[in-house]
Amino acid sequence: MAQKGEQKEELMHVEMRVTAVGNSTTGKYEKGDKGNICRFSSDGKPVVHWDKDNKGCRPDNLATVTMLHLSDTHNLHGLLTENLPSADVLIHTGDWTENGTDEEHNDFNKWLGTIKEKYKHIIVISGNHEWPTEGMTTNPNMLRSALNPKTHLQNLLTYATVLDHEETTVCGIKIFGSSWVPWTGGKDPDQFSPSPEKQGLAQKAGRDLTGPAHRFDEIPEECDVLMTHGPPAELLSNDWGSSAELRKVIQAKPPLVHCFGHLHHQRGFWQRNSTGWDGLIEYEHTGAGTWSEPVDFPDRMQLFSCNAMKHETEKVLVSGGRLIYAVPKADGRWRFTC
Image (cartoon, rainbow, N blue to C red; front, side, top):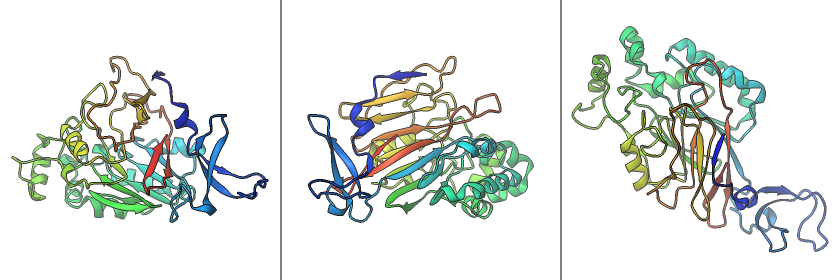
């Protein structure tokens, strides 16, 4: 495990959710009151903004919201069941299947049904493995389903909300899901696949093969969390499967958080602090290189999470879900940390 820099103390402690274990001698709080530690005094004592005072908190949503980010589980979701933490929102950024078959979707949905009590909301977007080229070549039903991916996947995944280039708001957080478009290949999400079946699919869907293959231009301004399957280009050390067009869009319309997967040997995160970025590489693969600190991303962006979980070649998960904490701020915005 390699870490760039040291995790800032303020990010580890500031704005943590706390519950009073006793009554205050000053009468400011009573046992059981909840609030946020918003800073520490010069002598190291926590300064708490208590919910009942509505100071430093959103009056409409006072509690920290927890999000669990999964990605690229590739039919191995069952291995997570025992140790999967609870959260307010579970998000999966694609590739829960290997071959995109109905049987695989059904198995994933059955698993979601066994864990649904741990989460208030379960939100997913498709990855490239939900629309494999070989499957579309041999399976006419998959080819037809890809013309209406939202309906197809939502009918199969009854325990999740499927986002297909659309936004939803849960727990006060605006989440936009930019799913993988079925007519592109895994190597380059900005280009149409050379597969005749996929090119025919794109034309049936009304896409001009001389125009853009992606749908990243539909990402809205001011969303809190952006879900894509793959990363923006030049963020990690290997641009296979990354998107130059996605990078342009989030530079112009930056989310607070960008969650993705796809690059299995690039898993980790970047988190903005008061002086720059802190990052942690959680899986180093031979030849993967090293991460460079994010550059040219607007100050609004707080966190990148790449959490492709399956090992590249072995049938094993090499990481668990990543917990992300959304802390409400006095100005109505969120502060995200992991």
